[in-house]
Length: 395
Image (cartoon, rainbow, N blue to C red; front, side, top):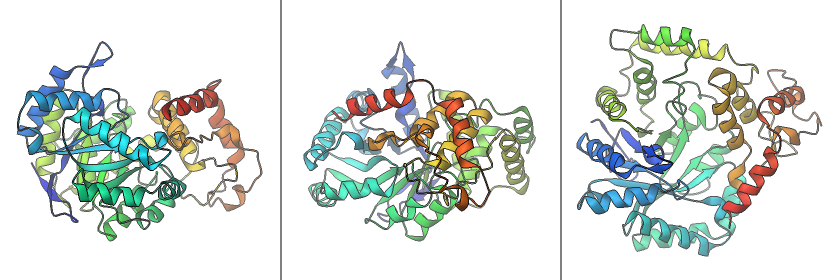
């Protein structure tokens, strides 16, 4: 296993992290036995970072049960879990959810603790008002939290603001070869590295869409890039080629996936992506992008929208729905709504004020295209369903 340094603590982390959200499932419940086999094999293969969250149903409990079955295992790894942001209405809630996570995991501390799914700088402003800074400092002093970070799902422009708003120990961003200009993107990756903040990468395969369901021409290009090339290996190597990346999370739910990823991680050092591999990824990106309908680059010049619509992320979801399937696009669209903030906004909230149009360097007719997003992704009743779900989450 290749290891990379957490440059703040000096801790050596496996380049491959285990994303527990996609633990094997049987009959609608986590298969703890199958998950245990994967966790133990991962640890034996050198993986020392396991990512879960309070909001992942049954996930922390399953991981805690695996620790209970295997004495000493907890001490060999780093646990990352996350604070359920929408549920937090006071500093007392911070304590409540951390305590519950620790109990579920069967441990007295979490090594890496994230504010889950931050979507804007406004979210951080609310956390500050609730006293998050003092609370986090107390938890670190008490040894209940090792390092504090955040996972990000907001526009590119807000990411540097968040980086500079607090002495973060690490951050987590969505990053893959199709998302260089989506959310934090490459600019965010480099901004974090410039500030010495370790970067954890999530969704390296775009929810599996860069492994399966690729357009035929993209798949052919990737499979032709060397005798051992395949789409998964190249997608991961493309990320590990960046020295700014501390580790990559992969949601592995079969032994074959685990073994392939461990083998790939072992040799995917920064700067080792071959020229023909890099070219193949670029051609695959172009092939996928040909399915895109809106030429949005995600620059964010159209923001802020007076109605709170996250325009670039709406377009990214819309494009994804054509390139990688409607379900994946729908998932991104709900995320783009800002559901985790408790104040979801959708393409249907556009009032055609035109403030965005004159600022768009791509000269996109944004109101018309948002109407297209609404027609494709906004199923009847979606805003009401999402807002009701958010209220339930916040109880």
